[in-house]
Image 1 (cartoon, rainbow, N blue to C red):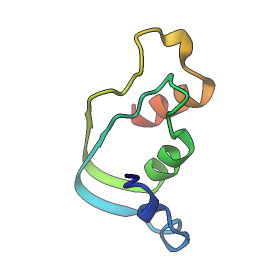
Image 2: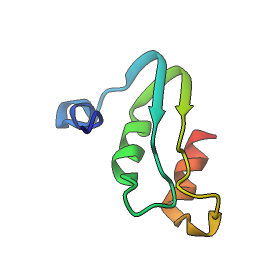
Image 3: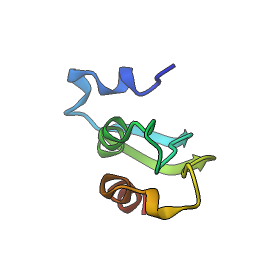
Image 4: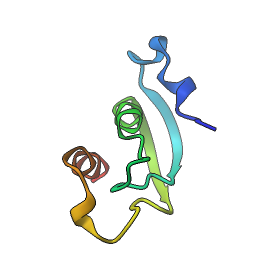
Length: 78
């Protein structure tokens, strides 16, 4: 199930999503299954007071597997 899909519709791209609390999980940076483009768009349109990253941010502790776009996501989360 892809929960990001409804949030990325054409009419939502120009709006900021305001939440008190947002939880993201199972990002799997460093993996081929990581949906990095969708996550990047989601984070660009997100306005939240608190962001909780709940488990599996990285697919492996081998950070050599992280691609350049994965490092950009980490920079956004920082």
